[in-house]
Length: 153
Image 1 (cartoon, rainbow, N blue to C red):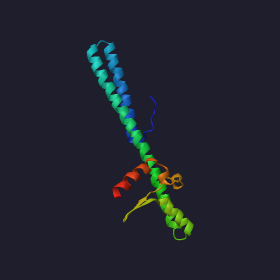
Image 2: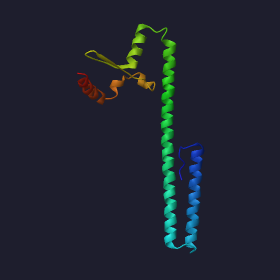
Image 3: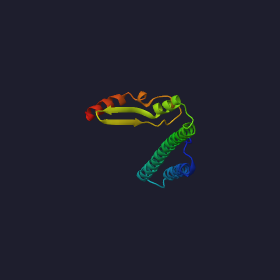
Image 4: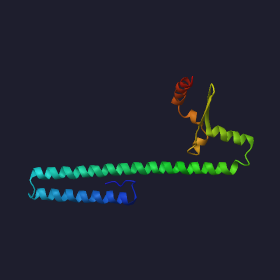
C-alpha cells in the first residue's frame, strides 16, 4: 500500500489497522481453502473485513484533508501575524502615501446610501493578497452589492 501524508498517532493507528486487517483477510482465506469455513461464512466475514478496510481508508482521507486545511490555516495565521507586526512597526513613522496605501489595502468598499454608511474591511491572508484588492478577486461581489443597495433604498 502507498503511504499517505497522515502523520502522528492517527497515521500509525491507520497503518497498523491496515496491516492487521490484511493479516485477518489472509487467515480467513487460508481457513476457507483448508475447508474449515463454508463459502457463505467466508464471504460474509470477508465482506466485513473489506468494509472495515474501506472505513479506515475513508478516515485516512479525512485526516489528510484535515491536515491540509490545518496547514493552510497555519500559513494564513503566520501571514496575518507578519502583516500585523509590519503595520505596528511602520504605522508611527509612515508617510501619508504609505498610510493611504494601508487604508486602501484594509478597506475594501465604502457604501453610502442616504444616511447610512457601510465600511467593508478585508484582511490580507497572504503576502500575495496584499497586492490585490479584494473586490478584484470576486466578480459576483458586484452583483451582491447591487442587490444590497436596493435594500437600503
